[in-house]
Length: 271
Image (cartoon, rainbow, N blue to C red):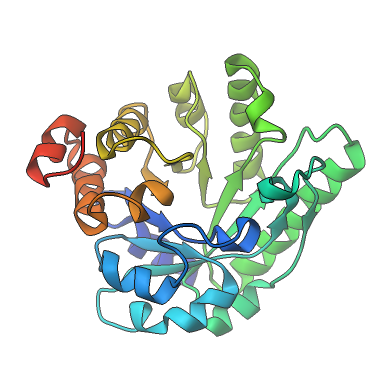
């Protein structure tokens, strides 16, 4: 068994499903509430997640979270994508190659995340974005690191439900064809088509902060019901009324097919 397979197996476990908490927002969008101090935040949420997604520069500050037995896996984002710089109004979805997989491994990464955005309106940008993804993916696999590909649509807030779904459907399949081991992406109006036509695990993201814990957990329930192999939640986990309890509730939904209404009562969360 390769190092890549061993690490992938540790993340998804016997259930084949994973709960990942994302706290890499500062790499594009500044410090979000609850994420000002990454190390402190990780200490508060505990070890309930299977993996933590964070930026390369934050991993050295959070060593204590990952250097214990049975700690979550460290998933490091490698590339920069201007699509995430929401506060600066960027529109071109330009991707640049910042950290190499070997750099992430030296920092202690167990897995890497590589982003891809296509349909930018410029064929050269699309080609370059694809080239960057593939180059990083090949390099990560050579040193035994599994790759979570992230498909994030260009100008995602301006697209109708059908166009949005079609782009996610095609983008996820492209990531699998280019070598990703798993995929993080948005929930769509026909998510079963996305999960059923892609040969690798799809992880549904949490997207915008929801009004209540129950709203976020219902999204997770829908994602799992429609074939997701797990979730990647950021603000909805970190900014939950009880972050550690919320992650336990996510684990019940993802691993035990529990219902949101039941885990809200079980863990005394907001609904």
